[in-house]
Length: 419
View (cartoon, rainbow, N blue to C red):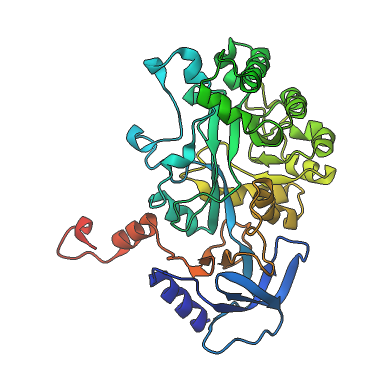
């Protein structure tokens, strides 16, 4: 126990410049892979990559050894779709870059139809919000352009980022985001039928080079997604999901459903189309007319039907990213198998967004790992140490530093002067 916390403390103080070679010994390894849960197993990390998994592994000379003593070890967790790195302070507009609201600067149709909007360009890897999420075991995110409040149906593009201070997105993870449903009706003449009319017009513009809705850059951006591109549709109502599946089939899109409050009603159709769903299991009441069929066991029903399920919040997924574990835990409480709950935070979103080398504990995977005090799907459990590509991450954030400042004994100066 003393050795574990000594190592964790040393890791927390370090600002790592290179991958760390280490052996995590005697962990309950939740692989989020076909191997399932491996009790009393060791994980050997060398050069930032998992090199071996098994019981009783020999530690190479000079390697750091972490005694897990049976504690859970998981892959790093997915934050869900978020604005991490592009939203610092919600109430300060100069620090919020997720919404494109061009207003009167351009013709109205161009303000609404700008698929070339690329959120990756605003990503700040040194955002103070990132360590707040990372100390909770969250290690990767997908940037999602703002919702209908930004005044857009074709909201723009975003990629996956690892929360290790790297400025570059993960290759091959770029997605286009589309807002649909009742909340988006004001952007389509007051009718959701208008949404499909306008989307078909946008596709026609991209295919034929016309400029009814899109700029030249917008046509080029949308064209890259036709016939095989990944498109995330924010949609809840079962009838709208059916239309989404038909639209994706017509134009060769790799659709992903985000929200999906009524997805359980079309589970067989989602499975047949091989379309995954990013769920918020806390949306379990008929909050509005798009979610009349919301229910607690949505994730369990989808999983039982063979649909890939991952988790993402519909509310403040940036500043409260840590709550994504609560989403998975509630889904498990409502009937989703525990292993599927963990996969919904690890391997499932990695697979959905084309991240091949992360999201699982397996030989050859990048060593993005979290050692927990207890069940990671229980909100009372804590991440004791996070490693990204074998690098120990400082287990500090602005929040922990403020906590420590104001818990310190009072001195001669006001607490605001305590460093």
